[in-house]
Amino acid sequence: MLLSPRAQAHRVGTGTGRPRTTRPRRLALALLAPAVSVCLVAAGAPPVPLGVGDRLYPHLGNPGYDVASYDLALTYSGSNDKPLQAVTTIDGWTTGTLDRINLDFAHGEVRSVEVDGEPAAFATAGEDLVITPARPLPRGDWMRVTVRHTSDPVSPGDRDGGWVRTADGLAMANQADAAHLVFPCNDHPSDKAVFTVRVTAPNGYTAVANGLPTDVDRAARATTWTYRTLHPMATELAQVSIGRSAVLHREGPRGLPVRDVVPAKDREALEPWLRKTPDQIAWMESKVGPYPFETYGVLVADTATGFELETQTLSLFEKGLFTEPAHPAWYVESIMVHELAHQWFGDSVSPRTWSDLWLNEGHATWYEALYAQEKADRTLEARMKAAYGASDRWRTAGGPPGAPEPPKPGQKIGIFRANVYDGAALVLFALRQEIGQEAFDRLERSWLDGHRDATAGTADFVRLAARVSGRDLGSFFQHWLYDEKTPPMPGHPEWKPAAPAAKAPAPAPASAVKAPRPVAKASE
Image (cartoon, rainbow, N blue to C red; front, side, top):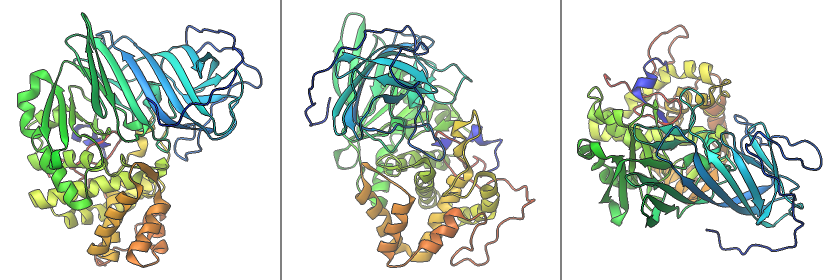
Protein backbone atom coordinates (compact mmCIF):
# COMPACT_ATOMS: atom_id res chain seq x y z
CA MET A 1 0.00 0.00 0.00
CA LEU A 2 1.17 3.51 -0.70
CA LEU A 3 -0.14 6.79 0.55
CA SER A 4 -1.12 9.24 -2.13
CA PRO A 5 0.72 12.57 -2.42
CA ARG A 6 -2.30 14.38 -1.00
CA ALA A 7 -2.44 12.13 2.04
CA GLN A 8 1.28 12.49 2.63
CA ALA A 9 1.63 16.19 2.14
CA HIS A 10 1.37 16.79 5.89
CA ARG A 11 3.71 13.94 6.87
CA VAL A 12 7.34 13.87 7.67
CA GLY A 13 8.49 11.09 6.81
CA THR A 14 -15.42 -24.49 -5.41
CA GLY A 15 -13.76 -26.40 -3.56
CA THR A 16 -10.26 -27.97 -3.34
CA GLY A 17 -9.61 -31.55 -4.38
CA ARG A 18 -10.06 -33.34 -1.09
CA PRO A 19 -13.45 -34.98 -0.50
CA ARG A 20 -15.34 -33.84 2.55
CA THR A 21 -15.59 -36.26 5.44
CA THR A 22 -19.12 -37.25 6.32
CA ARG A 23 -20.20 -38.22 9.81
CA PRO A 24 -23.45 -38.32 11.82
CA ARG A 25 -24.35 -35.04 13.48
CA ARG A 26 -26.87 -34.16 16.14
CA LEU A 27 -29.15 -31.44 14.96
CA ALA A 28 -28.33 -28.14 16.61
CA LEU A 29 -31.13 -26.00 17.91
CA ALA A 30 -32.36 -23.91 14.97
CA LEU A 31 -31.43 -20.60 16.45
CA LEU A 32 -31.73 -17.51 14.29
CA ALA A 33 -30.60 -14.05 15.30
CA PRO A 34 -31.55 -10.76 13.66
CA ALA A 35 -28.03 -9.37 14.13
CA VAL A 36 -24.54 -10.44 14.96
CA SER A 37 -24.83 -8.66 18.28
CA VAL A 38 -27.49 -11.11 19.47
CA CYS A 39 -25.77 -14.09 21.07
CA LEU A 40 -27.02 -17.63 20.84
CA VAL A 41 -26.73 -19.84 23.88
CA ALA A 42 -23.91 -22.37 23.67
CA ALA A 43 -22.59 -24.81 26.20
CA GLY A 44 -19.39 -24.13 28.09
CA ALA A 45 -17.52 -20.92 28.80
CA PRO A 46 -18.49 -17.61 27.24
CA PRO A 47 -17.14 -17.03 23.73
CA VAL A 48 -13.88 -15.09 23.55
CA PRO A 49 -12.01 -13.45 20.66
CA LEU A 50 -8.94 -15.34 19.52
CA GLY A 51 -5.96 -14.52 17.33
CA VAL A 52 -2.85 -16.10 15.87
CA GLY A 53 -0.60 -14.02 18.08
CA ASP A 54 0.54 -11.41 15.57
CA ARG A 55 2.65 -8.84 17.43
CA LEU A 56 1.02 -5.89 15.66
CA TYR A 57 -2.56 -7.21 15.36
CA PRO A 58 -2.96 -9.72 18.20
CA HIS A 59 -6.64 -10.50 17.53
CA LEU A 60 -6.35 -11.04 13.78
CA GLY A 61 -6.64 -14.57 12.46
CA ASN A 62 -7.76 -17.62 14.37
CA PRO A 63 -6.10 -20.87 15.41
CA GLY A 64 -7.37 -24.38 14.86
CA TYR A 65 -8.04 -24.51 11.13
CA ASP A 66 -6.54 -23.80 7.71
CA VAL A 67 -8.81 -22.25 5.08
CA ALA A 68 -8.60 -23.84 1.63
CA SER A 69 -11.21 -21.76 -0.20
CA TYR A 70 -13.71 -18.93 0.14
CA ASP A 71 -16.90 -18.65 -1.87
CA LEU A 72 -18.43 -15.17 -1.60
CA ALA A 73 -21.90 -14.42 -3.00
CA LEU A 74 -22.78 -10.71 -2.83
CA THR A 75 -25.96 -8.95 -3.93
CA TYR A 76 -25.75 -5.19 -4.50
CA SER A 77 -28.95 -3.15 -4.51
CA GLY A 78 -27.68 -0.20 -6.54
CA SER A 79 -27.12 1.98 -3.47
CA ASN A 80 -23.75 2.20 -1.77
CA ASP A 81 -25.49 3.33 1.42
CA LYS A 82 -27.31 0.02 1.90
CA PRO A 83 -25.86 -3.27 3.12
CA LEU A 84 -25.23 -5.97 0.56
CA GLN A 85 -26.88 -9.35 1.07
CA ALA A 86 -24.17 -11.99 1.31
CA VAL A 87 -23.39 -15.67 1.76
CA THR A 88 -19.82 -16.66 2.66
CA THR A 89 -18.84 -20.31 2.41
CA ILE A 90 -15.50 -21.41 3.85
CA ASP A 91 -13.92 -24.79 3.20
CA GLY A 92 -10.87 -25.91 5.11
CA TRP A 93 -9.08 -28.40 7.34
CA THR A 94 -9.06 -28.45 11.10
CA THR A 95 -5.55 -28.39 12.61
CA GLY A 96 -6.79 -29.21 16.09
CA THR A 97 -9.97 -30.43 17.76
CA LEU A 98 -12.51 -27.59 17.63
CA ASP A 99 -15.43 -27.15 20.01
CA ARG A 100 -15.84 -23.68 18.52
CA ILE A 101 -14.80 -22.01 15.30
CA ASN A 102 -13.74 -18.38 15.50
CA LEU A 103 -14.02 -16.23 12.38
CA ASP A 104 -13.05 -12.58 12.10
CA PHE A 105 -16.18 -10.55 11.30
CA ALA A 106 -17.18 -7.15 12.60
CA HIS A 107 -19.44 -5.12 10.34
CA GLY A 108 -22.60 -6.91 9.34
CA GLU A 109 -25.69 -8.74 10.50
CA VAL A 110 -25.39 -12.52 10.77
CA ARG A 111 -28.65 -14.32 9.98
CA SER A 112 -27.65 -17.95 10.16
CA VAL A 113 -24.63 -20.24 10.29
CA GLU A 114 -24.23 -23.83 9.18
CA VAL A 115 -21.32 -26.19 9.75
CA ASP A 116 -21.23 -29.08 7.29
CA GLY A 117 -24.81 -28.33 6.29
CA GLU A 118 -26.30 -28.33 9.80
CA PRO A 119 -27.42 -25.28 11.80
CA ALA A 120 -24.86 -24.05 14.31
CA ALA A 121 -25.09 -21.69 17.25
CA PHE A 122 -23.16 -18.43 17.01
CA ALA A 123 -22.26 -15.41 19.10
CA THR A 124 -19.94 -12.44 18.95
CA ALA A 125 -16.89 -11.66 21.02
CA GLY A 126 -14.92 -8.54 20.17
CA GLU A 127 -14.48 -8.64 16.39
CA ASP A 128 -14.94 -12.41 16.22
CA LEU A 129 -17.92 -14.44 15.13
CA VAL A 130 -17.80 -17.50 17.42
CA ILE A 131 -19.54 -20.58 16.03
CA THR A 132 -20.47 -23.67 18.03
CA PRO A 133 -21.06 -26.70 15.78
CA ALA A 134 -23.44 -29.45 16.81
CA ARG A 135 -20.46 -31.55 17.94
CA PRO A 136 -16.71 -30.95 18.18
CA LEU A 137 -14.73 -31.23 14.96
CA PRO A 138 -11.77 -33.63 15.19
CA ARG A 139 -8.29 -32.68 14.12
CA GLY A 140 -7.61 -33.28 10.43
CA ASP A 141 -11.28 -33.00 9.51
CA TRP A 142 -12.56 -31.33 6.37
CA MET A 143 -15.13 -28.68 7.30
CA ARG A 144 -17.50 -26.34 5.51
CA VAL A 145 -18.85 -23.24 7.25
CA THR A 146 -21.66 -21.24 5.61
CA VAL A 147 -22.59 -17.81 6.96
CA ARG A 148 -25.58 -15.86 5.70
CA HIS A 149 -25.05 -12.21 6.53
CA THR A 150 -25.07 -8.64 5.35
CA SER A 151 -21.99 -6.76 4.24
CA ASP A 152 -22.29 -3.16 5.31
CA PRO A 153 -20.23 -0.35 3.72
CA VAL A 154 -18.41 1.49 6.46
CA SER A 155 -19.61 5.04 6.96
CA PRO A 156 -17.00 7.65 5.99
CA GLY A 157 -14.80 8.36 8.99
CA ASP A 158 -16.12 5.28 10.80
CA ARG A 159 -13.08 3.10 10.18
CA ASP A 160 -10.29 2.65 7.66
CA GLY A 161 -10.81 -0.01 5.03
CA GLY A 162 -13.36 -2.56 4.00
CA TRP A 163 -15.83 -1.32 1.41
CA VAL A 164 -14.84 2.03 -0.11
CA ARG A 165 -17.65 4.13 -1.50
CA THR A 166 -16.99 5.49 -4.97
CA ALA A 167 -18.89 8.00 -7.09
CA ASP A 168 -20.77 5.16 -8.79
CA GLY A 169 -20.55 2.16 -6.49
CA LEU A 170 -18.10 0.32 -4.26
CA ALA A 171 -14.58 -1.09 -4.19
CA MET A 172 -12.57 -2.89 -1.50
CA ALA A 173 -9.54 -1.79 0.49
CA ASN A 174 -8.86 -4.46 3.11
CA GLN A 175 -5.24 -3.90 4.13
CA ALA A 176 -4.20 -4.52 6.82
CA ASP A 177 -7.07 -5.69 9.00
CA ALA A 178 -10.32 -4.85 7.24
CA ALA A 179 -11.38 -7.85 5.14
CA HIS A 180 -13.46 -8.97 8.11
CA LEU A 181 -15.47 -5.75 7.81
CA VAL A 182 -16.72 -7.19 4.51
CA PHE A 183 -17.01 -10.96 5.00
CA PRO A 184 -16.33 -13.56 7.72
CA CYS A 185 -12.82 -14.92 7.30
CA ASN A 186 -9.52 -15.88 8.86
CA ASP A 187 -8.20 -12.38 8.38
CA HIS A 188 -4.44 -12.85 8.54
CA PRO A 189 -2.01 -13.15 5.60
CA SER A 190 -0.54 -16.36 7.00
CA ASP A 191 -3.71 -18.23 5.91
CA LYS A 192 -4.04 -17.86 2.13
CA ALA A 193 -6.81 -19.50 0.14
CA VAL A 194 -8.34 -19.54 -3.32
CA PHE A 195 -11.43 -17.40 -3.88
CA THR A 196 -14.61 -17.65 -5.89
CA VAL A 197 -16.65 -14.42 -5.96
CA ARG A 198 -20.20 -14.02 -7.30
CA VAL A 199 -21.66 -10.54 -7.49
CA THR A 200 -25.24 -9.74 -8.48
CA ALA A 201 -25.99 -6.13 -9.35
CA PRO A 202 -28.71 -4.23 -11.23
CA ASN A 203 -28.27 -4.03 -14.98
CA GLY A 204 -26.17 -1.02 -15.88
CA TYR A 205 -23.54 -1.88 -13.28
CA THR A 206 -20.42 -3.95 -13.86
CA ALA A 207 -18.84 -6.14 -11.19
CA VAL A 208 -15.21 -7.24 -11.29
CA ALA A 209 -13.16 -9.25 -8.77
CA ASN A 210 -9.74 -10.85 -8.40
CA GLY A 211 -8.79 -13.55 -10.86
CA LEU A 212 -10.49 -14.51 -14.11
CA PRO A 213 -14.17 -14.37 -15.07
CA THR A 214 -15.83 -17.77 -15.28
CA ASP A 215 -19.48 -16.87 -15.86
CA VAL A 216 -21.89 -14.01 -16.58
CA ASP A 217 -25.59 -14.68 -16.00
CA ARG A 218 -27.85 -11.93 -17.32
CA ALA A 219 -31.46 -11.72 -16.18
CA ALA A 220 -34.26 -9.22 -16.74
CA ARG A 221 -33.20 -6.78 -14.05
CA ALA A 222 -29.84 -7.95 -12.73
CA THR A 223 -26.61 -9.62 -13.81
CA THR A 224 -24.43 -12.03 -11.84
CA TRP A 225 -20.69 -12.10 -12.50
CA THR A 226 -18.47 -14.95 -11.24
CA TYR A 227 -14.68 -14.73 -10.81
CA ARG A 228 -12.18 -17.26 -9.56
CA THR A 229 -8.54 -16.98 -8.54
CA LEU A 230 -6.11 -19.61 -9.78
CA HIS A 231 -3.63 -18.89 -6.98
CA PRO A 232 -4.12 -18.60 -3.22
CA MET A 233 -4.65 -15.11 -1.86
CA ALA A 234 -4.52 -13.38 1.51
CA THR A 235 -7.82 -11.89 2.66
CA GLU A 236 -6.29 -8.40 2.80
CA LEU A 237 -5.77 -8.58 -0.99
CA ALA A 238 -9.37 -9.40 -1.95
CA GLN A 239 -10.97 -6.97 -4.40
CA VAL A 240 -14.52 -6.49 -5.64
CA SER A 241 -15.46 -3.46 -7.75
CA ILE A 242 -19.08 -2.58 -8.50
CA GLY A 243 -19.81 0.47 -10.59
CA ARG A 244 -20.74 1.96 -13.93
CA SER A 245 -17.45 0.77 -15.26
CA ALA A 246 -15.70 0.02 -18.51
CA VAL A 247 -13.52 -3.09 -18.59
CA LEU A 248 -10.65 -2.66 -21.04
CA HIS A 249 -8.63 -5.60 -22.34
CA ARG A 250 -5.13 -5.76 -23.76
CA GLU A 251 -2.29 -8.26 -23.91
CA GLY A 252 0.79 -8.34 -21.71
CA PRO A 253 4.06 -10.23 -22.04
CA ARG A 254 3.76 -13.86 -23.21
CA GLY A 255 0.05 -13.39 -23.86
CA LEU A 256 -0.85 -12.43 -20.28
CA PRO A 257 -4.45 -11.12 -20.12
CA VAL A 258 -4.44 -7.52 -18.88
CA ARG A 259 -7.78 -6.02 -17.94
CA ASP A 260 -8.35 -2.54 -16.53
CA VAL A 261 -11.50 -1.36 -14.77
CA VAL A 262 -12.25 2.36 -14.96
CA PRO A 263 -15.25 4.68 -14.69
CA ALA A 264 -16.86 4.44 -18.12
CA LYS A 265 -16.92 8.21 -18.52
CA ASP A 266 -13.14 8.43 -17.97
CA ARG A 267 -11.88 5.65 -20.22
CA GLU A 268 -10.44 7.92 -22.92
CA ALA A 269 -8.70 10.23 -20.45
CA LEU A 270 -7.14 7.27 -18.60
CA GLU A 271 -6.10 5.25 -21.65
CA PRO A 272 -2.63 6.91 -22.03
CA TRP A 273 -1.75 5.65 -18.54
CA LEU A 274 -3.35 2.23 -18.86
CA ARG A 275 -1.48 1.34 -22.04
CA LYS A 276 1.79 1.59 -20.11
CA THR A 277 1.05 -1.49 -18.00
CA PRO A 278 2.27 -4.22 -20.43
CA ASP A 279 5.69 -2.58 -20.73
CA GLN A 280 5.86 -2.15 -16.96
CA ILE A 281 5.14 -5.85 -16.50
CA ALA A 282 7.87 -6.68 -19.02
CA TRP A 283 10.28 -4.42 -17.12
CA MET A 284 9.51 -6.16 -13.81
CA GLU A 285 9.89 -9.57 -15.43
CA SER A 286 13.35 -8.57 -16.66
CA LYS A 287 14.32 -7.91 -13.04
CA VAL A 288 12.69 -10.73 -11.07
CA GLY A 289 11.22 -13.30 -13.43
CA PRO A 290 7.77 -14.20 -14.79
CA TYR A 291 4.65 -12.46 -13.55
CA PRO A 292 3.20 -14.81 -10.89
CA PHE A 293 -0.57 -14.71 -11.57
CA GLU A 294 -3.20 -15.40 -14.20
CA THR A 295 -4.01 -11.77 -15.05
CA TYR A 296 -3.21 -8.20 -14.04
CA GLY A 297 -4.81 -4.82 -14.37
CA VAL A 298 -5.51 -1.42 -12.87
CA LEU A 299 -8.73 -0.57 -11.03
CA VAL A 300 -9.30 3.18 -11.06
CA ALA A 301 -11.81 4.30 -8.45
CA ASP A 302 -13.51 7.68 -8.46
CA THR A 303 -12.98 8.32 -4.77
CA ALA A 304 -10.48 9.87 -2.38
CA THR A 305 -8.83 7.12 -0.35
CA GLY A 306 -5.45 8.71 0.34
CA PHE A 307 -3.64 5.57 -0.86
CA GLU A 308 -3.13 3.07 -3.65
CA LEU A 309 -3.34 -0.68 -2.96
CA GLU A 310 -1.89 -3.89 -4.40
CA THR A 311 -5.06 -6.00 -4.43
CA GLN A 312 -4.10 -9.27 -6.11
CA THR A 313 -4.31 -9.22 -9.93
CA LEU A 314 -6.19 -5.86 -9.84
CA SER A 315 -4.39 -2.97 -8.12
CA LEU A 316 -6.56 -0.18 -6.72
CA PHE A 317 -5.76 3.46 -7.64
CA GLU A 318 -7.46 6.76 -6.97
CA LYS A 319 -8.57 8.48 -10.16
CA GLY A 320 -6.92 11.69 -9.00
CA LEU A 321 -3.47 10.14 -9.27
CA PHE A 322 -3.88 10.09 -13.06
CA THR A 323 -5.92 13.25 -13.58
CA GLU A 324 -4.26 15.83 -11.34
CA PRO A 325 -1.77 17.76 -13.50
CA ALA A 326 0.57 18.43 -10.58
CA HIS A 327 1.92 14.86 -10.72
CA PRO A 328 4.85 14.43 -13.15
CA ALA A 329 4.56 11.48 -15.50
CA TRP A 330 7.63 9.73 -14.03
CA TYR A 331 6.08 9.91 -10.60
CA VAL A 332 2.73 8.43 -11.64
CA GLU A 333 4.46 5.61 -13.50
CA SER A 334 6.65 4.88 -10.48
CA ILE A 335 3.58 4.51 -8.31
CA MET A 336 2.07 2.16 -10.87
CA VAL A 337 5.25 0.06 -10.73
CA HIS A 338 5.18 0.06 -6.91
CA GLU A 339 1.77 -1.64 -6.89
CA LEU A 340 2.78 -3.93 -9.74
CA ALA A 341 5.94 -4.99 -7.87
CA HIS A 342 3.73 -5.99 -4.95
CA GLN A 343 2.19 -8.72 -7.09
CA TRP A 344 5.51 -10.52 -6.60
CA PHE A 345 6.47 -9.09 -3.19
CA GLY A 346 3.51 -9.23 -0.81
CA ASP A 347 0.93 -10.97 -2.98
CA SER A 348 2.66 -14.04 -4.43
CA VAL A 349 5.06 -14.14 -1.46
CA SER A 350 2.95 -12.94 1.46
CA PRO A 351 4.23 -11.89 4.89
CA ARG A 352 4.04 -14.55 7.58
CA THR A 353 3.39 -11.83 10.17
CA TRP A 354 2.73 -8.12 9.88
CA SER A 355 6.18 -7.46 11.36
CA ASP A 356 7.52 -8.84 8.06
CA LEU A 357 5.89 -5.91 6.26
CA TRP A 358 9.31 -4.44 5.40
CA LEU A 359 9.78 -7.28 2.89
CA ASN A 360 6.65 -6.16 1.02
CA GLU A 361 7.02 -2.42 1.11
CA GLY A 362 10.80 -2.30 0.99
CA HIS A 363 10.88 -4.35 -2.20
CA ALA A 364 8.02 -2.48 -3.86
CA THR A 365 9.77 0.79 -3.03
CA TRP A 366 13.06 -0.60 -4.32
CA TYR A 367 11.66 -1.44 -7.77
CA GLU A 368 9.66 1.76 -7.86
CA ALA A 369 12.89 3.70 -7.32
CA LEU A 370 14.87 1.54 -9.74
CA TYR A 371 12.25 2.14 -12.41
CA ALA A 372 12.42 5.91 -11.84
CA GLN A 373 16.20 5.72 -12.20
CA GLU A 374 16.11 3.79 -15.46
CA LYS A 375 13.16 5.61 -17.03
CA ALA A 376 13.47 9.15 -15.65
CA ASP A 377 17.07 9.57 -14.41
CA ARG A 378 15.93 9.85 -10.77
CA THR A 379 19.02 8.19 -9.34
CA LEU A 380 18.54 5.41 -6.83
CA GLU A 381 21.69 6.33 -4.94
CA ALA A 382 20.53 9.93 -4.42
CA ARG A 383 17.22 8.69 -3.06
CA MET A 384 18.94 6.21 -0.75
CA LYS A 385 21.35 8.87 0.49
CA ALA A 386 18.37 11.09 1.36
CA ALA A 387 16.70 8.14 3.08
CA TYR A 388 19.88 7.48 5.07
CA GLY A 389 19.80 11.05 6.33
CA ALA A 390 16.23 10.60 7.60
CA SER A 391 16.50 6.99 8.74
CA ASP A 392 17.29 7.66 12.40
CA ARG A 393 14.22 9.91 12.67
CA TRP A 394 12.07 7.24 11.06
CA ARG A 395 13.33 4.60 13.46
CA THR A 396 12.61 6.86 16.41
CA ALA A 397 9.10 7.64 15.16
CA GLY A 398 8.03 4.20 13.99
CA GLY A 399 10.57 1.62 15.11
CA PRO A 400 13.27 -0.06 13.02
CA PRO A 401 12.18 -1.62 9.70
CA GLY A 402 12.08 -5.19 11.04
CA ALA A 403 10.14 -4.33 14.21
CA PRO A 404 7.66 -1.54 13.42
CA GLU A 405 5.79 0.03 16.30
CA PRO A 406 2.19 -1.19 16.76
CA PRO A 407 -0.53 1.08 15.39
CA LYS A 408 -2.12 3.55 17.74
CA PRO A 409 -5.75 2.95 18.79
CA GLY A 410 -8.08 3.87 15.96
CA GLN A 411 -5.21 4.02 13.45
CA LYS A 412 -4.95 0.42 12.30
CA ILE A 413 -3.03 1.30 9.14
CA GLY A 414 -0.57 3.28 11.24
CA ILE A 415 2.13 0.64 10.70
CA PHE A 416 2.59 1.98 7.16
CA ARG A 417 5.23 4.55 7.99
CA ALA A 418 8.39 5.74 6.25
CA ASN A 419 10.47 3.15 8.11
CA VAL A 420 8.87 0.28 6.16
CA TYR A 421 9.02 2.06 2.80
CA ASP A 422 12.20 3.96 2.04
CA GLY A 423 13.62 2.84 5.38
CA ALA A 424 13.26 -0.80 4.29
CA ALA A 425 14.46 -0.08 0.75
CA LEU A 426 17.56 1.36 2.42
CA VAL A 427 18.15 -2.06 4.02
CA LEU A 428 18.04 -3.63 0.57
CA PHE A 429 20.46 -1.02 -0.77
CA ALA A 430 22.86 -1.76 2.09
CA LEU A 431 22.51 -5.49 1.39
CA ARG A 432 23.39 -5.00 -2.27
CA GLN A 433 26.37 -2.93 -1.22
CA GLU A 434 27.40 -5.72 1.17
CA ILE A 435 27.04 -8.81 -1.08
CA GLY A 436 27.33 -7.29 -4.56
CA GLN A 437 24.95 -6.82 -7.46
CA GLU A 438 25.19 -10.35 -8.85
CA ALA A 439 24.44 -12.09 -5.54
CA PHE A 440 21.67 -9.60 -4.80
CA ASP A 441 19.95 -10.28 -8.12
CA ARG A 442 20.17 -14.06 -7.55
CA LEU A 443 18.73 -13.59 -4.07
CA GLU A 444 15.71 -11.71 -5.40
CA ARG A 445 14.81 -14.37 -7.94
CA SER A 446 15.49 -17.22 -5.52
CA TRP A 447 13.24 -15.59 -2.92
CA LEU A 448 10.33 -15.44 -5.33
CA ASP A 449 10.90 -18.88 -6.83
CA GLY A 450 11.17 -20.55 -3.42
CA HIS A 451 8.10 -18.97 -1.81
CA ARG A 452 5.67 -18.47 -4.69
CA ASP A 453 2.02 -18.76 -3.63
CA ALA A 454 3.14 -19.09 0.00
CA THR A 455 4.04 -17.04 3.05
CA ALA A 456 7.53 -16.24 4.28
CA GLY A 457 9.15 -14.14 6.96
CA THR A 458 12.27 -12.22 7.81
CA ALA A 459 14.13 -15.27 9.12
CA ASP A 460 13.56 -17.01 5.77
CA PHE A 461 15.02 -14.04 3.89
CA VAL A 462 18.04 -13.86 6.19
CA ARG A 463 18.77 -17.58 5.72
CA LEU A 464 18.40 -17.37 1.96
CA ALA A 465 20.65 -14.31 1.74
CA ALA A 466 23.35 -16.19 3.64
CA ARG A 467 23.03 -19.22 1.39
CA VAL A 468 23.09 -17.24 -1.86
CA SER A 469 26.00 -15.00 -0.80
CA GLY A 470 27.95 -17.74 0.97
CA ARG A 471 28.33 -15.48 4.00
CA ASP A 472 27.02 -15.24 7.54
CA LEU A 473 24.82 -12.13 7.41
CA GLY A 474 23.21 -12.49 10.85
CA SER A 475 25.00 -9.49 12.33
CA PHE A 476 24.34 -7.38 9.24
CA PHE A 477 20.58 -7.96 9.36
CA GLN A 478 20.41 -7.63 13.13
CA HIS A 479 21.81 -4.11 12.94
CA TRP A 480 19.96 -2.98 9.83
CA LEU A 481 16.56 -4.40 10.75
CA TYR A 482 16.45 -3.97 14.53
CA ASP A 483 18.87 -1.31 15.79
CA GLU A 484 17.51 1.98 17.09
CA LYS A 485 20.15 3.82 15.06
CA THR A 486 20.98 3.32 11.40
CA PRO A 487 24.25 1.39 10.86
CA PRO A 488 27.07 2.74 8.66
CA MET A 489 26.36 2.29 4.96
CA PRO A 490 28.71 -0.23 3.28
CA GLY A 491 30.75 1.55 0.63
CA HIS A 492 29.59 4.99 1.75
CA PRO A 493 31.29 5.88 5.04
CA GLU A 494 30.67 9.54 4.23
CA TRP A 495 26.88 9.18 4.56
CA LYS A 496 25.65 10.57 7.85
CA PRO A 497 22.20 10.62 9.50
CA ALA A 498 20.65 14.04 9.89
CA ALA A 499 20.93 15.67 13.29
CA PRO A 500 18.00 14.78 15.62
CA ALA A 501 16.66 18.32 15.59
CA ALA A 502 16.68 18.58 11.81
CA LYS A 503 13.37 19.55 10.26
CA ALA A 504 14.22 18.44 6.75
CA PRO A 505 11.30 16.86 4.89
CA ALA A 506 11.20 13.11 4.57
CA PRO A 507 12.80 11.84 1.38
CA ALA A 508 10.70 10.92 -1.50
CA PRO A 509 9.27 7.53 -2.12
CA ALA A 510 7.29 7.71 -5.31
CA SER A 511 4.42 5.48 -4.40
CA ALA A 512 1.12 5.24 -2.68
CA VAL A 513 -0.36 2.06 -1.12
CA LYS A 514 -3.13 1.31 1.33
CA ALA A 515 -1.38 2.33 4.43
CA PRO A 516 0.75 5.27 5.26
CA ARG A 517 3.79 5.12 3.15
CA PRO A 518 6.03 8.06 2.24
CA VAL A 519 5.71 9.20 -1.32
CA ALA A 520 7.76 11.43 -3.54
CA LYS A 521 6.42 14.94 -3.80
CA ALA A 522 5.38 15.97 -7.27
CA SER A 523 7.74 18.92 -7.17
CA GLU A 524 10.80 16.75 -6.60
